[in-house]
Each structure stands twice: as structure tokens, then as C-alpha cells.
Length: 354
Ligand SMILES: Cc1cc2nc3c(=O)[nH]c(=O)nc-3n(C[C@H](O)[C@H](O)[C@H](O)COP(=O)(O)OP(=O)(O)OC[C@H]3O[C@@H](n4cnc5c(N)ncnc54)[C@H](O)[C@@H]3O)c2cc1C
Image (cartoon, rainbow, N blue to C red; front, top):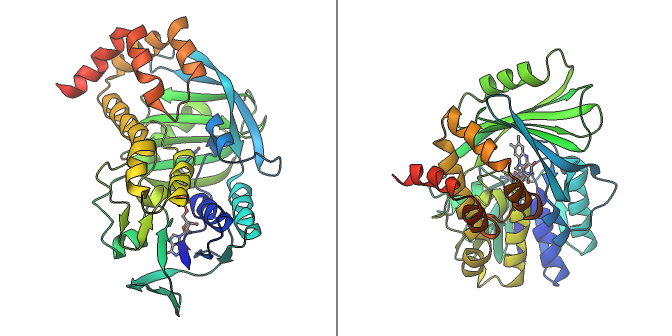
């Protein structure tokens, strides 16, 4: 018996993969509904197609361009070779849960994991025996805490509003550099935008500042906020019969703070071979998580003038071409090429080192 804690996208996807292999899988989710509450912009790069068939039932929009603003107000537009998908997270998570159930996994709602005494789990008031315990219980993973896998993790804050806007370009997301860590406006339709900011601190103030720029007078339909784990290269992924995956394992890109694609990749690695999970993750997942962390550390040192210069450097055909065609999920595939085509990027990296 495999017990997965957390019916988020990674827990349900993990359950689907393991049940498909014939394993007996139970998923325990503390909420009474899958996919609620939402704390996500729902952007998925084209890489998602490697893991999942996209369905109209949960896809709300497709994004072909990113308009990036420097603090000096200048902007560039990057046209994606392969479009991003924007999903309704409640419907997306529910779809993944249905996939798991179709393969025979059982999902228990209103079932909060409290602790485990070895292989005996305390779920609500019940005691349940398991052979394997997988923590897919998100950034604050109780499974990690209770099993010596917390590893001094740190977080950033993501704050977002969903609002009515009448000047959206439906196929274009907007990104502001130098506001918090970065800020965004992602259209979910031609008149509704998801507008947010990610930052180490003062998340509310940064969001207010962004709203002054982007949504003055707009009707706010919803407010969402949540903590996102910062990838920790020293994160332990396994101890005895306990495994971590997704946000619970800090498997989130530090460049965009998106966790779904690489979380799904890690779930595949775990389903393929549990014994080699840690080793294979190091080879297949961690390299890009680590590079994204280095890029973020470099950008954290940016002064306003560096952001302006960065956007100016990106605004060259040979550089845009790399950004337009290479996957943002895998910086290992584009970083070297970017540095070769524009050695001036190196100066930003050197600032981090010295
Ligand atoms: C504002 C914001 C915007 C974001 N935008 C994007 C984006 O555009 N694209 C992207 O890829 N990522 C984005 N992310 C990150 C993304 O939301 C996460 O990486 C993703 O949800 C991780 O999925 P998960 O299944 O690992 O964890 P979660 O989605 O956190 O799911 C964990 C599940 O476990 C359940 N749970 C927790 N504790 C227990 C317990 N003790 N017992 C039972 N159940 C429990 C929770 O209820 C939850 O359902 C964003 C995050 C924020 C905060």
C-alpha cells in the first residue's frame, strides 16, 4: 500500500502514475474539494505536453508572447515558438484526481494527515497502516516535518489578484522586472487578468504598487496569496519508506517560481524507480532547479540600472531567438548559448560571485 498525502496536482499525478503501474494507492487530502483554495497563476510551459494531454475542460487561455517591462518603462516582446497554456487550477487539479481514480487510486477528502508512528499513519482520527508514505503535501509539508525531512527550507511570497481589465491582449502576458522579484499580468480571458507579484518580503506593498501601474480602478474579483518554497539543493527527498515530491520537496524553479512542470517530472522519476529516486532526481531534475536558483541569486543583486541594461541586452535578435525557442523550464539548455551569444551577460553573473 502506498499512501500519498496531498491531492494537489503533484499528489494526484503521482497517484495516477503509480496506480497505472498496478500499485495500490490511497491519496489523503485535507480539504473537502480538490483544487480549492486556488493560489496559482496557472501558467504551464509547453513542456507540460510531455506529461499530460491538455483538455478544453481546464484550459482557459493560450499565451504566445511575453511583454517584458524594464523599470525605465522600456519594453520588449518575446514571441514564444511554442505557446504556454493557462489553466483553471481547480479544474486542472480535479482532472488529475479523476485520472488517478480511473487507474484505481482511491482519494479520501477531508482526511488530514497528522502524524505517523513508523508505518502507522494518523489520518484525522483514524489509524492506517502503509508500506510507503509519499509527502505531496505542499510547501509546509507536515510529512517532511514529522520525518526529519524539513531541511531548513525558506519561502518567497506570491500575492495575486484576479481582476476585470479592458486593455488586455489575450495572447500576451506582461512581466515587470524590478518590482518585488518580478511581477506579472496574465490574461485568463480577453477581459480578466491574473495580476501578481512574487517577493521575499512586503508582498502586499509590492502588489499595491503593481495594481497602481496595471489595474487602476479595476474591479477585483478575487485575492490569492501563498508561500512558495525556495529550491534547496540540500533538501533530502527520502528517508526509509518516506518520500517527498513537488512543493513538499522544494522542486520549484526559482526563476519563475512555477512548480508544476518540474514537480510532475519528479513524480515520473519516482514512479519509474523508487529505489533510485534520489539519484535520478539529482541527474534529471536538480540540475535545472539549481541553475534557476543561481540565475535568481544573480538577479537578486540587480540594481535598477541592471534591470534596464538586461532588458536592453535581451532586445537583440540573436538573444530573443534563444528565449523564443528554448524551454524556460530547462535553463541548462539555454544558459551557455546565451552567454556565448552575449558575453555581456557574464558581468551580471560575476557580480554574484565577487
Ligand atoms: C501566487 C502563486 C502563483 C503561482 N503560479 C504558478 C504558475 O503559474 N505555474 C506553476 O507551475 N506554479 C505556480 N505556482 C506554484 C504552484 O502553485 C505549486 O508549485 C504547485 O501547486 C505545487 O503542487 P503540489 O501538489 O506539490 O502542492 P500543492 O498544490 O500545495 O498541494 C498540496 C496539497 O496537499 C494538501 N495537504 C497539505 N497538508 C495536508 C495534510 N496534512 N493532510 C492532507 N492533505 C494536506 C493541500 O490541501 C493541497 O491540496 C504559484 C504559486 C503561487 C503562491
